[in-house]
Image 1 (tube, rainbow, N blue to C red):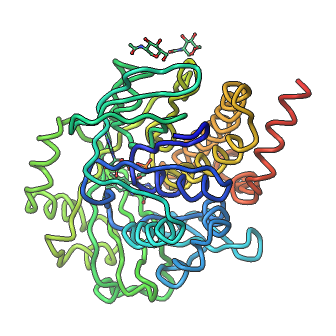
Image 2: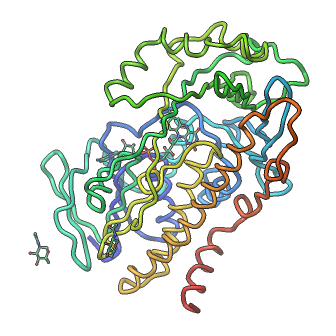
Image 3: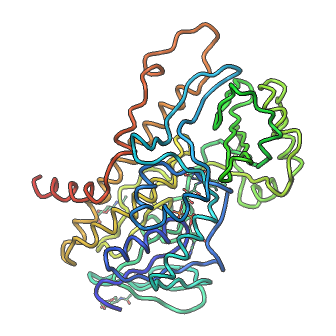
Length: 405
Ligand SMILES: Cc1cc2nc3c(=O)[nH]c(=O)nc-3n(C[C@H](O)[C@H](O)[C@H](O)COP(=O)(O)OP(=O)(O)OC[C@H]3O[C@@H](n4cnc5c(N)ncnc54)[C@H](O)[C@@H]3O)c2cc1C
Ligand SMILES: *[C@@H]1O[C@H](CO)[C@@H](O)[C@H](O)[C@H]1NC(C)=O
Ligand SMILES: *[C@@H]1O[C@H](CO)[C@@H](O)[C@H](O)[C@H]1NC(C)=O
């Protein structure tokens, strides 16, 4: 162990990207993952310019760029088009939105960690913190071994075990909404020329139906339907996922009330492409760091947010990149203060995402026929603050402002 080495719990998107961001700042780290491979859930993800700029500076964007589907706007409609929301724009922000399979992104991150000689240990499940001092931290793995490092980072997802050290009783909160997802060939939809995708189609009775192209040539679409639902336990969700006929019925329920494209989409669904995503959130937390700042949480572990603005993963990339910059800039005795500044800066942006989610929800809620758009509905989204920043600069500004304050 050196004075600066970091242990990362979780080799998901947050953990792997954090490892690369730390390496860029010449900070040594080791990644520990409980499974035999990184978690690959939910098919594809959408990356916006803020995240793509970070992946670009870590040498990942060029690798994944040819592997995904590029697009600019997310559309909203009922039986008629309503509105759109920008998810990327090469001219304005440097990048179009990119929809890419999670495993492709993970593969690219794994190749990069290997090239840089970053160690990843699989089958190492973090269980609990043993001891935190002013200079280091030690912990137990499930296999009976212990670990020690200058800092332990919980990048272990929404059900974080590391978070238990900071919040022993906290459980993620169910939002009473669930999404059922699948993938079908785009040709099956018989899309009219005027029907723009990716799109969210709202129906007051049946909830929202989402269609989003994927694969580099857009030849496949993700289909997803969201609906209110009562909470189930882990086994309950697993049982529902295994009940493929329930999932197909769920997709088809009320299809006749949606545009014909939706009826075509659900006419034939491969059962092994179906997944369920119950929406859980982590309530706003006062501390992402422990008393001596030797234990830190980030990504979904710190702030799992609803998927409305599609920022879940994108915000995790902002966390890890700015963390690495601030950790690099702080001397050991400044770490505690530095990480508080980091958390404050990051929480402000997460709060703005939550406000954005609420604004999008307000627009998505279908109006009665003939009703005027309310003021908040017709005001265009200003997304410069979200998509434009340079994150090295942002972290520096946080530190400067803290000095002046
Ligand atoms: C079905 C589904 C679809 C989704 N689609 C999208 C999307 O389209 N866009 C989007 O932005 N977000 C999406 N999300 C949310 C997104 O998955 C998360 O925001 C993102 O995965 C968070 O990354 P993470 O690295 O913080 O956590 P995770 O991806 O959960 O990774 C955590 C890692 O830590 C490991 N781990 C956990 N506990 C331990 C332990 N005790 N010891 C060691 N390792 C451990 C896990 O095995 C895993 O590899 C989706 C989520 C689900 C469930
Ligand atoms: C934690 O570490 C400190 C400093 O090394 C030591 O004095 C203390 O006994 C340790 N506590 C436990 C519970 O191991
Ligand atoms: C957050 O950390 C501070 C300082 O260590 C502590 O006083 C406070 O109780 C913590 N808050 C919670 C909710 O744990």
